[in-house]
Figure 1 (cartoon, rainbow, N blue to C red):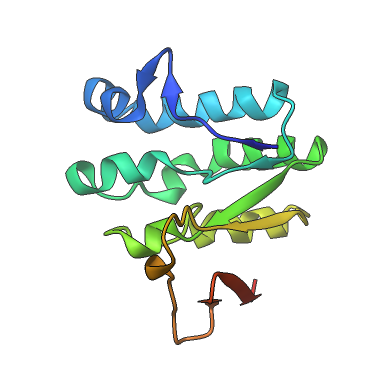
Figure 2: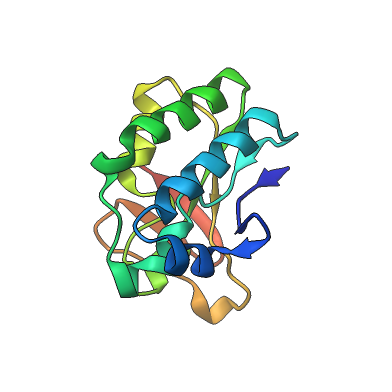
Length: 148
């Protein structure tokens, strides 16, 4: 079962960012921690989804500014045997990075996390993503390999 945060106190993430900037990201990560602590899930989906709603107006958040709470989220996930999804949808959009960022994926690995799932939010085959540098490869609707 995938778990993700798309609303905070019944408000869409975009609204939360607009009304609570710059605290919007902190509120998001706190809500994510609450979900990971209590929800009956197997995998955290698109862990830093909030950046999709903020990068155009506010830029991509600085990992270092939220590293402490992200680490708490990942530790709790590992403790509860919850994995993370690496979602490629941000690579097709203006973000040009996965959800979560490689910083979070690396931290998850360093903390002992082992459960990964790969997602793409693809709804049409013409949106298949490919990258030639070998870091991630996606072809014919299937993930080929992933280097961490």
